[in-house]
Length: 181
Image (cartoon, rainbow, N blue to C red; front, side, top):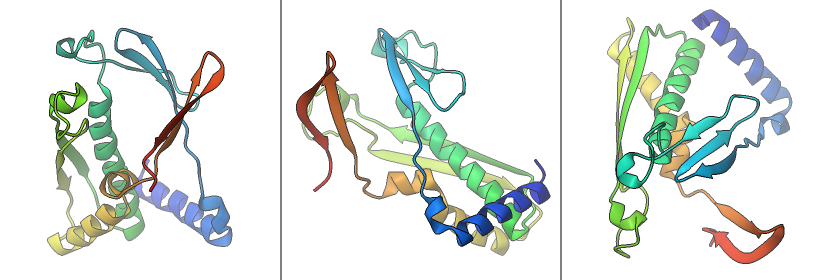
């Protein structure tokens, strides 16, 4: 899709949201299912199922990316999408954007070997490589806008309320899964 086409599509979307702010509130959904071992399937909208697995060292078949790798991929692709969108809207030429992300995880947390080690990433580092004929100051402005409006980066960097429920053999199991205060 060209920058002009993208700019027009986003302009139409923004105009619609300005006329009807309530239409801006969306609910995204994903359904996952355990298949076998540590292999799972994820379904999003009408797309083909996404297989998720673990490396052999963690008991998997190493047939697909694992969840924490997908989190890094979600961060990188979300940033690239937001770069493309805002560059189009701001009229900034963009030839290429590539994000490389690394997550630092201590398996002691996952396996419950240390109460002081979190189960998830302790640190995520990313580098964005941009190819553009725009001047550095224009790209600095674009970076500031993207870093302030990337949904996945925002989700990773601020506390987000998470709630869950468990059903056992068709009946609700009375457990509390929440990080709400």
